[in-house]
Amino acid sequence: MSRGVEDETTVNDSYSVTVPAAVRRAADIEAGDKLRWRVDEDGTLSIEIVKQRYGAFSELEPVNIGETTNAAEDHDFVAGDH
Image (cartoon, rainbow, N blue to C red; front, side, top):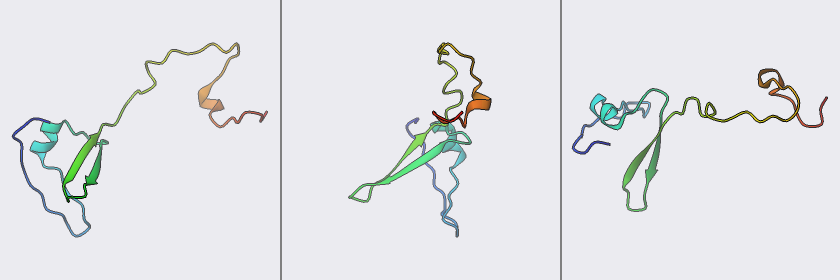
């Protein structure tokens, strides 16, 4: 995150907060990202950005197992079921 960006927001009645635009831009937070909240024993609050990963498997090479498979059709297949 870029240094020097500071802003504040208010916790609403449903305990939701809005991440200020300047903070979103500086931290490169996008829709779908998650914020992991942590409170240390001394009361320090830290927030970790967990980036939403698109195409996590796109760089994997297929493995030839000697038979034709179709993941879209076979995704519920359980070993031993035929």
